[in-house]
Image 1 (cartoon, one colour):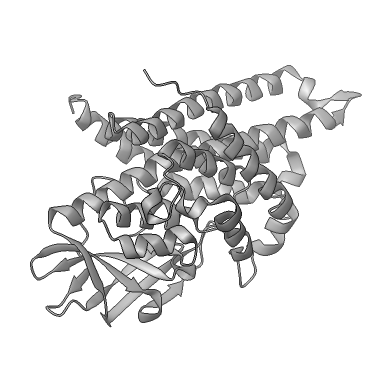
Image 2: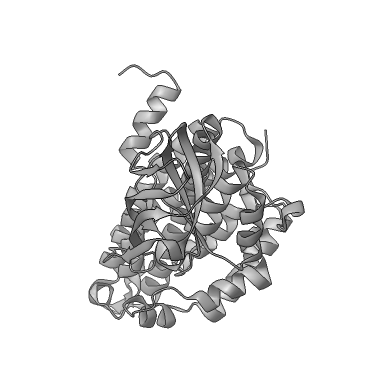
Length: 364
């Protein structure tokens, strides 16, 4: 059995990302940016791409990447979840790049891996693995695309759109320059990860995969995304527990720390137990993605388990912070919104439980 503990390389990567985020993505900076006209921190993204190399982390070295595995990508996702960093990691690195690597679209992979371009997978963020090939966009005989896709993650800052479309000869995976599409950013519940509607009207496109290869590339990207999202949810839950413990240790009532009251200790202990379970599920999913072993089952287990844990942890954080937790001046509301948005992203927990039942032949 593979060792699910973090390796020395993974811990070094975590330290590099955490140090950078501590310096560049503080809670104060996050709150100041969250409701501005430019919610994404593209300067931070360029630093992550150039100095840490996250843009090409899981891309083969011959394509300009670092040849890392899903385990390293999951470590980065966990750290980004700990500070809900407003960067297009999920849309570009996890979804778009994975789809293009699986489709052997080397030219576009190199652009994303270098950080010179940002990508987005043009499917609704709620799309779950196993949902089938979408048909909201169609390709005419000359390869131009028309149609509309709603709630696409990170599309508002994308340079390349990876678009699944129904072509004349069946399903196809296409790449469209974002400048050829109309991208309308929506009012997102999650202020740190925006979604947008993408409208295509005879947009020039490059076909990178067709038929079963296109369907396989899309499914691989969605599975990879759902598995890595479990690590992000772990990071969100870890922040909630860590910050709540820190606050309760320093908050005094009746002459003693609030955290010393037995009922609150029990609630924190339950959160800690949940966090341990979430990390185990996320690590198992990341390792399965890295080794190719039982991937659909491991991803379904992780998403069914971790999404509710992240929501519960952030809800408890707000309640146990008392009055300050209810205000816009404290970042807890941003974590709750990320946790609730992640609960829907790439399939709800109920959807993953139903898929898991099919995968392990449980009776209806």
